[in-house]
Length: 169
Length: 79
Image 1 (tube, rainbow over the protein chains, first blue to last red):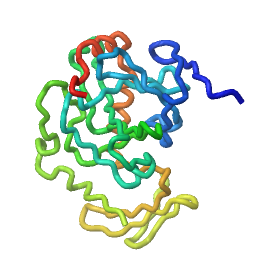
Image 2 (tube, rainbow over the protein chains, first blue to last red; image 1 turned 60 degrees about the vertical axis):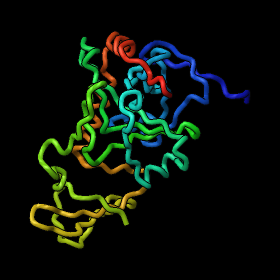
Image 3 (tube, chains in turn cyan, orange; image 1 turned 180 degrees about the vertical axis):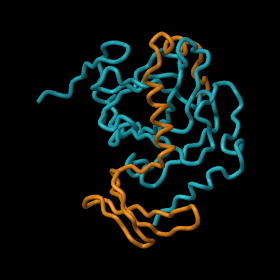
Image 4 (cartoon, chains in turn brown, green; image 1 turned 90 degrees about the vertical axis):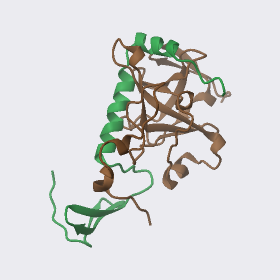
């Protein structure tokens, strides 16, 4: 067989040619889209922190995502042992973190970032996984530029107590 | 919905690979132990639904709005 070719896919911003080294494997898909296992990142503009996480197989399935560190310097993502294993992370330098973005129709200036369901990618091994954050330390709708307020604390102390702690043995 | 009654210490098997055990009951809280293969994700419902909704919204962003938002913010220059 000839050497691996670029794949031409339909994305939400038109046809794209994706080289094999830009295909990301999501062994669990994304939440709500478990069956989709192959994605790629599509740049919208060169200087923008926003990119599209595009399914290789479904043109409609392109999620608007963003580099959170362009907005928040100290965004801290908790990745459990099991997730680390799936992602084959052994070096923090391999890791790329993206968060999903909500744009209210017609109001791009009111764009918010969802800091509770980050997508973590091992860019060396090209493996990706969505890692919901259990403790509500960060808000679901963070407005770029605004100070980050600890979300959980705002609504009653220990609001998560009902869910209890997760343990593993 | 299938409804089963279990006592603390008793389990339910879902197929060959998944076992759910009621570990204990304390007032309104029920402690559940899950033995699940690594390829089966487990989420608390409220967390799962929240991320699901956010994914849907990220997918449904209007095309023009996507380009407009991308033009509004610049990448962190310190990268």
